[in-house]
Image (cartoon, rainbow, N blue to C red; front, top):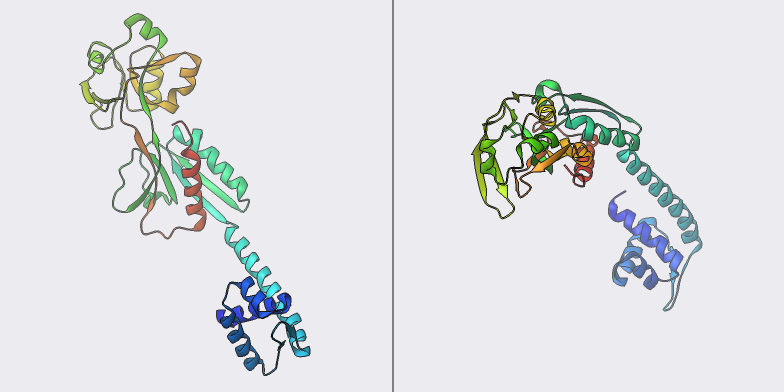
Length: 300
C-alpha cells in the first residue's frame, strides 16, 4: 500500500463519517476537487460504487458500507501499530558508558545519570571517574564529560555549560593577612597553586568592566590535585582558584570567602565528548540532551 493509497482510504472514511465531500475535504485538509478525484480513483480500483452522491449529500452504498467497516478497522490497527513503534523507539535499552571527572562526576554527572536510568528502566550504565583525560577510543566510553577540555580532531564536542571560577581564601587567612583589593595585590599574598595545567604561576582575571589583567603568583603550597589545593586553601595556607561549585558549601557555611569579587578568572567550558567515527545510539544522544538541559540550570 502506497502513502497515496493510505491517504485515499483516510479520505474515504472522512466522507463516510462527514456525510459529504465538502465536510470530508475540510476534515482532511484537501481541496474538494482532490477529494472527488481521489474517490473516483478509489472506486475505479475497487470496481464498485462506494458513495452515492447528490448535489447536497453523499451516502454510502451497500458495498461502500461494507468497505467502510473494513477500512476503519484497518486504519485503527495501523494507528495502534504506529503508536507501538513510536513507544519502542522511545523505550531505550542497552548500556551507557560514561566517563567524568572524579570530583565533578559524583556531584553532578552521577545523580543525573541515575535520574536518566529511572526514566528509562531498560537502560543500565557504567560510570568511570578520573582526573586524567580518558581517550574514548581506548576506554570505550560512549560519552566523556570534561571541564576545559580541548577536543582533538577525532572527537565531537558539545558544550554543556560554563563553569564559573573564583579566587577564594579561608576566613582565618583573611583575618591574618587582609583582603586583596586588586589582582596586583596577590603578589604580596601567599597563593596556593594547582600545577600540571597551563602556566600555574600566572593567574588571569577579567573585571566586570571587561578589562583583563594577569599577575604572577607564588606561595608555600602547590599540588596537581584539585582536592588538595582546595583543602590547603581552606586550611589557611593562602588564596587559591577554584570552580564555584567546589566551594559553594564552604562559602555558604562561612568557612571561606570569595576574594576580588569584581575580578574573576575566565569560566571553563564543560564539554560532552564522543568519538567522531562512532555512530551514536539514541540512548547516548538522549543522555547528552538530558545533561545539557539539566546542567544549564545549575550554578557551576
